[in-house]
Amino acid sequence: MKKTRIYNVEGALLIVLLQYDELHDKYIEIYPDLTENPVYTSKGNPIMLTVEDACAFGEQKDENERLIDCSSCRFYRQMPNTLIGVCINEKKINKPV
Image 1: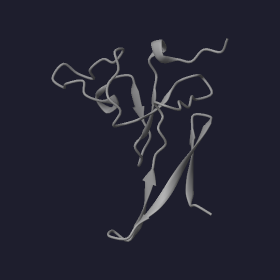
Image 2 (image 1 turned 45 degrees about the horizontal axis):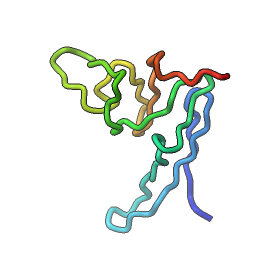
Image 3 (image 1 turned 30 degrees about the vertical axis):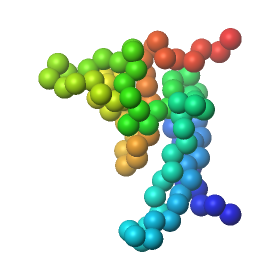
């Protein structure tokens, strides 16, 4: 059975596989492809990875910082101690039909 870590991201459960890294003698997280298979919070906000490229709806946190990835966007809310976060831009909300 594979090791996993489960995150509760604002009401959505995200399962992350753990893979043992012999060189560093510890388990590392193998994140799912959230672009190909999106996961949404209970309010419809997309769960993203910090390292995802910034989207067309992104805005800089401040004028001195380039908009490169989710972590540099003012709409990205980072979870502590992980590469997971939530996009709170209203243009990206997945509204139920």
